[in-house]
Picture 1 (cartoon, helix red, strand yellow):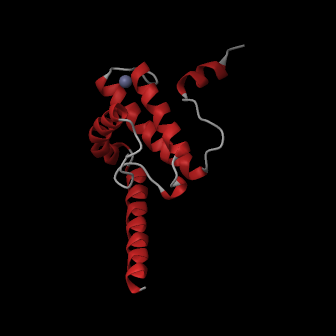
Picture 2 (cartoon, rainbow, N blue to C red; picture 1 turned 120 degrees about the vertical axis):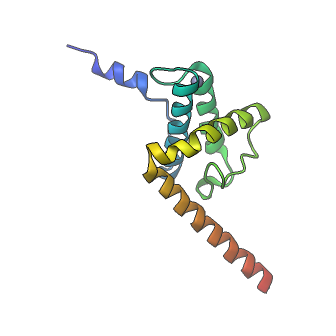
Picture 3 (cartoon, rainbow, N blue to C red; picture 1 turned 60 degrees about the horizontal axis):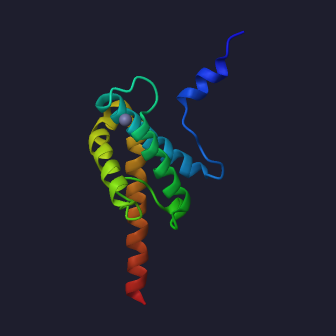
Length: 134
Ligand SMILES: [Zn+2]
């Protein structure tokens, strides 16, 4: 008997219970980006190196405690204001590297993100207009 489960769990990153579906999707985007970055920049063959794993876990934590909850998205929509400076810098570098490459590796994901961004902008414009009317 082979220990198939063990090999699998080595690859997947820890996910905390209590995430919404949206949060899980956001996180998997970030995971994808960090993975890409780690593989190319840190030469990680499988999974993430210590540093990138820490970054991913930090991102997950922040997402979990974000007051905006599901209204918030990563990257451009989120201004990562709640990140501590060292993590902010790290994720910025990762996004800068992986962002453009994401389009190549996973265009569906990018499209979904763009759609979401447009939607969010429209909503915020609407609420601003409402405020102005009052
Ligand atoms: Zn790494």
